[in-house]
Amino acid sequence: PRMVDTVTVTEVQEKTIQTLLHESKIEVYFGINESTLTEEQRQKLIPAVEFLQKNPEVSIELVGFADNTGSVAYNIALTEKRVAAVTQALTDEFKIAPDRISVSNGGLIVRGRSKGSVEEDRKVELRVIKK
Image 1: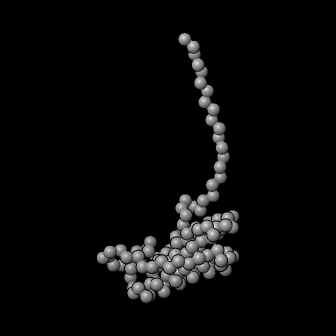
Image 2 (image 1 turned 180 degrees about the vertical axis):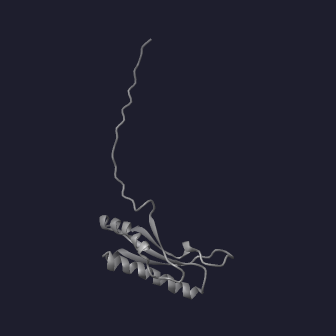
């Protein structure tokens, strides 16, 4: 009988993959009937800003949401104000070019028959998109 030795060769390749946090979106939350960014929520924008600075081919889309309290007209106006607040922070404070920011109207999040405010519904989502 003949003995055969086997050898396994493993090659390690290093690859860097840039990601924006652990997800492709960031959520910035607002208080009830509020459209002003708190300092804590403003800080959430920093990873997105750094990602945009390192990746000039990428832009972001802002989507505004409101909870299910109040009228539809009021909440649509409120989502627009929230998106405007985030846009202003990105352009004025963080110097992101306005042409790298697009806006998509979100809307009312309906939670079935439950009434009342749900914190997760009062937000603006920042979504990474390719130009």
